[in-house]
Length: 145
Image (cartoon, rainbow, N blue to C red; front, side, top):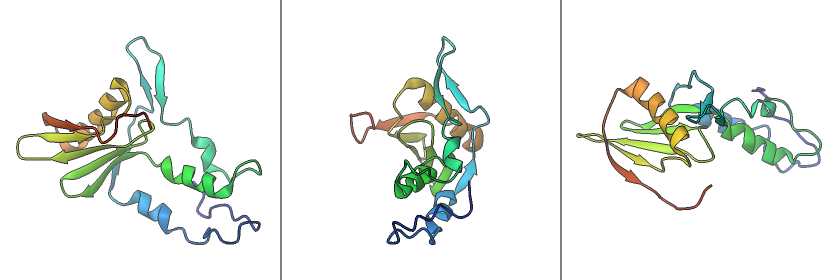
């Protein structure tokens, strides 16, 4: 990731000098997955955590710099502690999985868009937080993100 996001003089109203949002995406970071491709039982790749490395470079002339920057922020993947007892798993597909720890297990909020990515994300959570039973699941919306 570049330290200084692309500054486009044709969009002076965009705050490219302010990189606080990049710092914010790292808050609570615990770990990234070591296996970067999520595969189905038949071996086909269903999600590739490295597929968006092209966003590490500056925005090309064909992309709006603000959208490019948004993409750079969204590719920060891994397990993050939001507050004690609440964790997020980011970058495992189009949405974010949250895990809320309770006394008897965990509640999973928005368990991603397919079984394979959900399992990979939850495995990263368990690797760093230990095995815990899922005692509830909450879907905040029913459409694919």
